[in-house]
Length: 194
Length: 192
Image (spheres, rainbow over the protein chains, first blue to last red):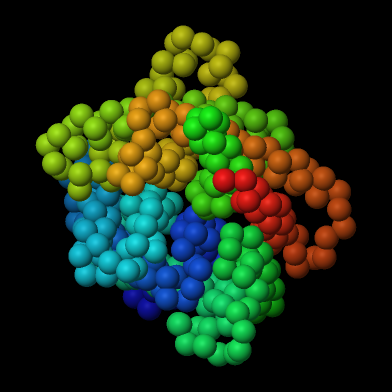
C-alpha cells in the first residue's frame, strides 16, 4: 500500500467519526465551538501518532498475551504528556476540555489503530496511519464544532458572523446529538453515490 | 438531604450520557433491545461502584501521600482493566447465575469511558468527596447511565416499526432520538 493511500484511507474512507463511529464521547463532549473541537482533535492526533510509532517499534518485544495492557500503558504515557503540557502552556483550553483529556486513554480509535495497524506494520507507515486517522478525527470535530458554534452562538472561531446569539440548544447537549445525526446522514448519502 | 441531592443530581440533572457525554459507545452499541440494556446496566453499576471505591483509596493513600498525582491516568486505567478481569473471574466462581446474566457485558466495560471518567471526577479536589460520597456518586451515576440506556432501548424498539426516510435509517435517526431524549433531560436542570 502506498504512503498516500495509507494517509487518505484514515482521513476519508475510514474516517473514525463519520464512517467507523469510534471516539464518540470526545466528539460530542468537546465540540461546543470550532476551536475546542480542533484542540481536542490535535491532542488526539498527537497521542495517536506517538503511540502508533512506539507500538510499532516495540511490537516484537511484547509477548502476545500481554499486548493489550502494554499498549494501554504506552497510550496512557503519551496522554499524560499531553495533559501536563497542555496544563502548562494552554491553561484555557485545558480548562474547557477538562475531563476529556485524560479520557483520550479510553478513546477506542487509539487502541484500535495500535492493535489493527501499528502492531503489524513498520514505524513510518504507522506514523502516517496515525496522522491520517488523527487528522480525519480532528477534521470531523472541527466541522461539528463549527456548525454548533455557527448555529448556537452566531460565530466561528470566536469571530462573530451574524447578529444575535443563535439557538443556545446547539451549544448544549441535545444539539450535539442532533447535528452529528444529520452530519452522518449527509456523509453516508455523499459517499454512497460516489 | 445532602445525599439525596447528590443522588438526584447524578441520575437526572448531570446525567452521565445525556449531559456529560460519557459512555456513548455502549449507549449506542447495546441499546437495540431493552433486555440487553438491562444486563449492561447491571454490569456497569457493579463495576463502576467497585472501581470508584478502589481508585478513591488509591488516590488518597498512595498517589496523594507520595505526591505522584501525575500518575493518575496510568494507574487508574490499569486498575480498572484488571478489576474488570478480576470481577469476571470471581463472579464465575461465586455466582454462576449472575455471571451468566452479565457475562458478555463485562469485557465491554473496560472501554466504557464513563467508568474512568467517574473515577477521575470522584477524586477531583474541588468536589472534596468523602469515601461514602464517592461511592454514592458512582452508584447513582451508574443508575443514571442505566436509566438513559433502558429508555433509549425502549425508544429504539418502537423505532424498528416506524416508517423512517431512507437516508435517516440506522445511526442518524438514533442520534437524533438521543438528542430529543437529552432535550427532555434538560428539563431536570432546574432542580439542583
